Length: 368
Ligand code: THG
Image (tube, rainbow, N blue to C red; front, side, top):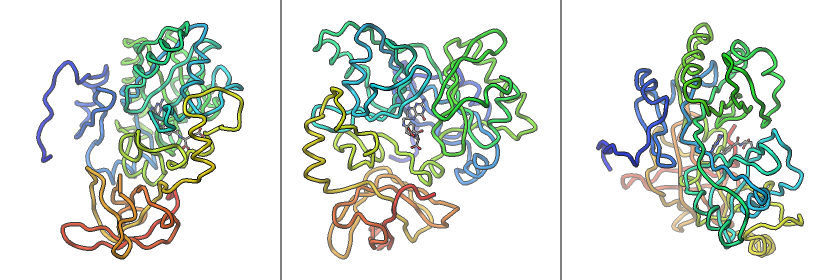
């Protein structure tokens, strides 16, 4: 696809912050959970640099919530994920692979435990709500499943702590990584977690009260002036360098969690019941035949819009799934599914770009 416009319609949902980010210079969108997700505010190199030094405010409303509430909520959530949630605590977030009956990835959300019988599943780009409703119906579970009106604002970067302290007070700094609590903004309570899709530190504000949320959005910019706050979005360079994986790009429903390197979130030895458990035991005992790895390529720019073949000598050994130029490495870095026995660091590889052979190397994730 060349640079055509995407037609607007009701199906392509905007967010409460869309008019604001358009005044603030958004230059590209992607579509995520049938919603606009900003993808760039000018050159990625510059905004990556800014994210690593200062603080950014992101419209990540497209990270939709699937709420599961009711007597069987915990059982349903556990059925969907291979991560053992039996010791999970209210007020904590859990990064959880969602797995189908074949042991394949359905999504990789953050799960928030709001109460013993109430959860938010903060999803990546696939329709988890229908998967959950199908399971609930098939198992006759006593649950309600719906998409609540929640539009996340992420505050990311090393100066996010100073900015959040100014608005919510120093108590916000007591929040532990992947913990959440409720904090007051002008008499409205907001759920705030210490999390976010960057490795630069920060928070996510799960806005339920839209009016208060847009005022808070504006307040973040007012109070952040001296911290050089800017509107931003998940940054392709930063997230690849950090090894943060993207559902639909780096992995999808054809891949299992071991291939994706999610081993530490796969609790097949536990005694909890989840979909695909037997299948995952089988895969584990047989061993995987391929794995997501980093690659470094001897070129200065590359944009991946579909999987690109990766070769070693004459043989096809894998596929490149995401890539960007990294100012840090001064080369193109990427995330690739590489077959055994080639999925090991310093394996030499090549890809063909415009009939030119580009050399590279396999490396471990994360890059940094
Ligand atoms: N925040 C929220 N919802 C989300 C995302 C988010 N939904 C979509 C997408 N991102 C889901 N994917 C991820 C991927 C990685 C992480 C969070 C969501 C992440 N990982 C940390 C890491 O890999 O270091 C921590 C994992 C852990 O230690 O448990 O943060 O960003 N609300």
